[in-house]
Length: 309
Image 1 (tube, helix red, strand yellow):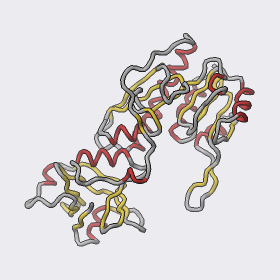
Image 2: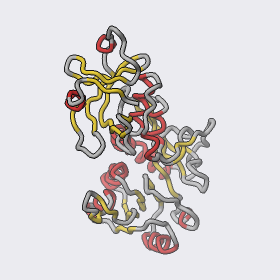
Image 3: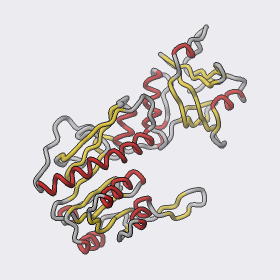
Image 4: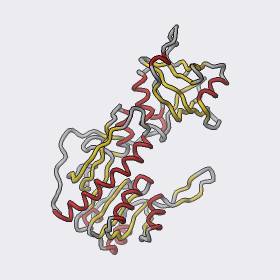
């Protein structure tokens, strides 16, 4: 099938490569414009732009799918559009341009977690089974008929970045199956069933952990906001970024007397944060204005104990 692809981040690259490897005629890729990255703010092509160049595909870099993008797409003569995390809306007339319309790989089991940050919000809510859905793109947000879906169960505390990487790889099977389904039956698709929920875009404030919550909820919140926008607690009024935390065995948190909630202490050479109903290891942290470091090393520099909020 002649396919026009749209996507931007690294999570979209596996689907692009899978479509090309499966023998489909990928006639072009639309991605967002080069963006400044790193401390020197060097303009850098998106991961999809780089992958498309490697595959020898025509590339359009556009931050809006406007009339110019539609004209470029029309020249490609695609039968189907496939979009994975492009970062913008597909509107008419581009939406109806391909013969079979557009399909979207979304990182949730729709209609749960429609919107910009489905994996992050699912993990933040304590969900460990996270799905992917390939559906028909329509004007309403993430509301089209479902073609294929699958799900993965992640261990407690799996960070969103890792979960997205795994889902991006496993989700390629759902994308390829959806394309095959449309080749066999262009009218394929089943309406979404259930009450929708929404995964709103994350802000920096979403990274603030509430250490008054039970340990499991704090770990889930951390997972949902790692690596972006990044989890943090406060120490002496300054943000302490928590790059890596893990659940610790109950016996490690069995202290006498029990430390106050929010107390971090060296136990058996590890930085242990005591919370309601359990404890977490601060494996890697980053104090304000400093580089990331081992959590125990940071805590030893504070006499072996600190109070976080």
